[in-house]
Amino acid sequence: MRQKLVIGNWKMHGSLAANAALLDGIKAAPARARLAVCAPFPYLAQCQATLAGTAIAWGAQDVSAEVRGAFTGEVAAPMLAEFGCAYVLVGHSERRSYHGETDATVATKALRALESGLTPVVCVGETLAQREAGETEAVVGRQLAAVVEALSIDQLGKIVLAYEPVWAIGTGKTATSEQAQAVHAYLRGQVASGSAAASADVAARMPILYGGSVKPDNAAELFSMSDIDGGLIGGASLKAEDFLAIGNA
Ligand code: PGA
Image (cartoon, rainbow, N blue to C red):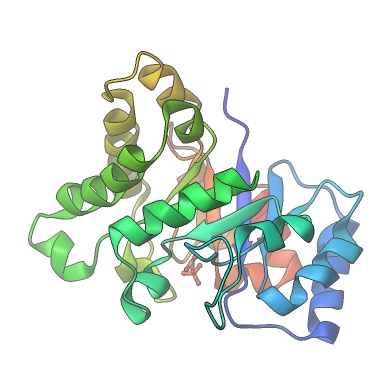
């Protein structure tokens, strides 16, 4: 049985004061799901100070594909580990589209995260044009395959996968629970069909989150699907009440 996991992606939002209020609100009430928040880099120390000792985990929204060196502006996985991060998002569609991250880069970032003991939340998803062209499985399958190839089966067993249709992110248009379930089942099947002996077991245990306009009023329906193990929440993670309502859906 996979426990539900709900991760907030704050994106480039927040301030010390706003985060303090948000984190206090999240801490104040229990949630049925495991909760985590992925904050902008400067606020990781605040998350660590505020959330240490609670059941809520924290993480970053990106990580460098390099370990150290002359890479101005980059943040390395060992640095995230020093701030107690449990998770790091890799391959979010905003990174892929605005920063030109390739499937290979995303796979290397996932590997760097694992090498530092972090859980990479590997994001995959198709654009509206790709969905309309019937390419959804080909696109998410290719994005996943790059990660599967870069990791050992043990490492693959430690990732979280997130399906986020690009057309549903921040648009208010959620995939229907059937649309999301179909892609989640496809992704799990792809992991299960790997050549390693443990592939089926790894696939059965892998948390696969849905992201894209998840709100308190649609979360329960999405999370009731057999292959949807929780959510990656953007906009609704900025309000403690909404985030907790999703964590209890
Ligand atoms: P959204 O964002 O919930 O605001 O659609 C989800 C995400 O980008 O992770």
